[in-house]
Length: 215
Length: 111
Image 1: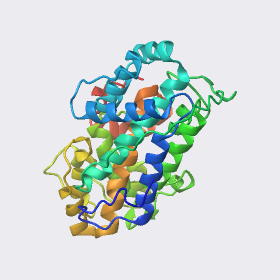
Image 2: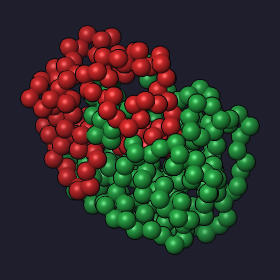
Image 3: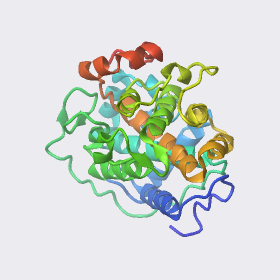
């Protein structure tokens, strides 16, 4: 990934080098072989997520139909996901592939969202990298609990991706940088980059309302 | 988190302002921050909501606000894609916000 990525020159506010580096690293992560999907498959997931978010009903022959359907739903209307659908997708492609797919779609939509809010053109997706998925096993602490997927404890958002530790770690890295760290969440009076906690949560709540996300 | 932060820090936040455009949120740049959050689901590139926040708070907080919206695009998808339940304790703590924002109509409200 090069310094030429994520110039975000059209932004009405200055974009920090730290943010640009985070986005570039994430693009590198998306392009690389994952735990269960290859680099080309991961980029196909990313492309499909973008297309579906724009209202396209494209599918990609590189991906199983169940995966394409899951990407479409997750990118455009995540709140419409049902337990039956999740069970069917996991039956079709496996827990690890589903969790990794959730991570990829979420990361791409997040970075695209920030990019669009900054008034910038979307960054072209990277060229996929060769190599085989790691197939790291699901950690033993991951079990079927109250969610629709096997997860780690306690029941907090990052732990629903625990079946694929690499996906979980990427989610944590990105959300800590864009929002705040776990320890910081205990402080109702924290100010981050000039924005007070209550202002931060006002944005968070408004975004979640727009996505019809109850949690 | 929103109600809790506002209460703990004595901010006179008007929650209903999130769903009532004419209401004053009671926070500096409150209306601008709400508009930014609500516009995150769009598909067009448009820097006007960030610019509006910057006009009130300055560029650094405006960039942070955009980043927070991005973070919650992740959180929203991860929890909805995996059915992470809210749980009775959280529902009790958030009863007022659920009611004011009429969240019981959301697809996963019963989970």
